[in-house]
Image 1 (tube, rainbow, N blue to C red):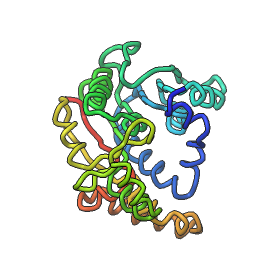
Image 2 (cartoon, helix red, strand yellow):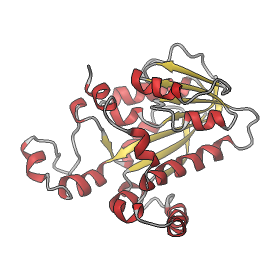
Image 3 (cartoon, rainbow, N blue to C red):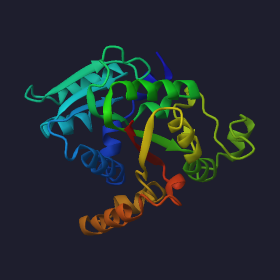
Length: 260
């Protein structure tokens, strides 16, 4: 069993996005998905790396046509268990690096909200982007999520007192970039690396968004907020989530691209 499959067979990804602090990332992502869907009649949506269906099932239950591709069989079974048969959704077991089962230019909006977390080479990332772009209609949108380097250094290396451990394992570059391998599960990037990937494919960036911003630095505070205060936190977050001077400090980012 791969490190990734072993991890997701035990981890409660659904619970992460349902927590108060996890809702910030979820609500932010849904806000920008709906922006990309606006003005399109009966759009076809593809989610690559659909997980347990937090996004795909929600959009299917909103009446959209959805294709959900997921690598981990257990996650796909959980996704299917949420369906009552009335949704226009097609679940597929598949890999972000090979979407040959899907035809070219088929989807209005393509979501890549998990795969980039677990791809460790530039070649793999470009292959995933190329496959996502291939199946997207000209003028359609790609929304690609990334895990960011700086929050890992701040919250994990220093925040959890892991400096000596990661240094001994040679997991930091001289300019403080965290070095990940498949056994580490998550790949960390910086904004300039995302821009360099975008430059290799025929897309136009619409926005780069901080999906959770400062939220994960203060999870306990956010989780303890009452509804009114949380509403104000979301208002503040939406006010600043597109500020480029803050993007790199977000734990997760959302790169919104349009196919040429």
